[in-house]
Image (cartoon, rainbow, N blue to C red; front, side):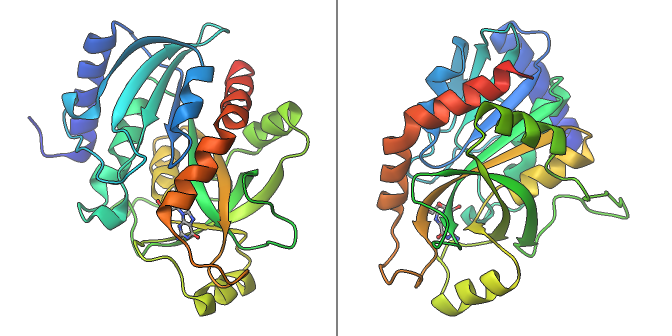
Length: 267
Ligand code: GMP
């Protein structure tokens, strides 16, 4: 065993190869709250097991997050790794478990990381609940960063322009937006939501940005897709709850799965 985060990811990648009988993976997909039922559309399952079988993974403690990893063969013959559930910063285990999946995937050969999430919509004037939105950029207000030390990573194109173009070829109706991340686990106050609108945010959530940074540090391309599960707090006056977030995901799983499958087939 090693204590180094990158070494631990390399160990997890070796175990992953052994458990799945797959030498190398091409693409990893992290499915957020509500996206889990979309996994079946992506390809034929080769193997599936709890993430805790891999070194360095802890079971997610959030409802709607299954905590398993699935190896899939896509119609186009790619080896895809699907994380059904993720670890969030608000679970209190620090930043390394949050990005361990992405680092493991990259150590297992992955060059493209697809990050999905459930998010509050900051622009109810133009966004509808149940709608997927491509992440064009992010604002990291988690107060955290997965990289320590003087490693200066360029984040000009965190969310790879070519991948966004490809997603829009699949679905020309896809809107784009800036994703803001807070640490959580509280939802925002209406005053915070007004602030985020002023700052240029379009989506608000508690995930994705740290994983995107870790992927870029490792040189992988990133596609981010948010599912708008609710308008941001105070924008339409209704209280927020996680059950509703999951329900919107379940109701739109088929569309999300179809979108992801088509995007992955174009890689
Ligand atoms: O329901 C909470 C989960 O969904 C968290 O994991 C968040 O990432 C995400 N989420 C959905 N809607 C919102 C929202 O309005 N604000 C924030 N901060 N997170 C949200």
